[in-house]
Image (cartoon, rainbow, N blue to C red; front, side, top):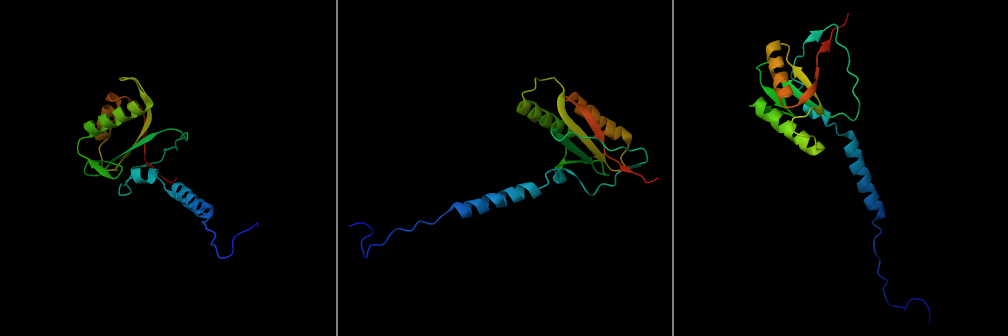
Length: 149
């Protein structure tokens, strides 16, 4: 006799393919809508206004380290206060060099974006760039607001 025996129950297994497909699509959606660069920007800063400011053409594959200097002179990175800029930048440079197998003492490819409150003195910004240069960073951008003419 072929076929199933009357009275016996066939085992039914659920089809997980649609469920897994939906989970994959949700993960993909959330990865696309998360903006990691927004976490690096301190929205409380009042940036200086400059009429001759020009937008920076930035390649998509470049790494960026955003440093925010608040009006009271504190350095904030990724939403966290950095009490010792020298130590933080040294650690960051070491992490970048280690992850990219860059020899110690060579120049780092990461671009440093400095966002300073308009009340910050230029001397403080230059001191921060000197600290960064000592640790191997050589590419800098300074964020300002372009004034309308």
